[in-house]
Length: 86
Image (cartoon, rainbow, N blue to C red; front, side):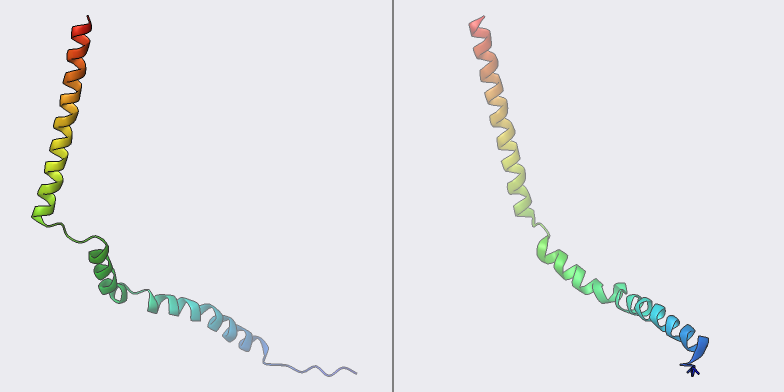
């Protein structure tokens, strides 16, 4: 003779399955709220990409302008050399 012991039945299994499925979903919902990451994100963005000051921006623009002028001078010299060869 075999003795069958019921461990809890189908209601226990449904309850366990509900817990297994709802636990990670609940944690994902709770810990992925934007309000928790907003301050950190703004702080890190400002640390990695600080706002440019006006002087820095002017230095970059003047450097770009000098490079364009130098390139234009080189092209003009190359054209003049071509004209003198012909």
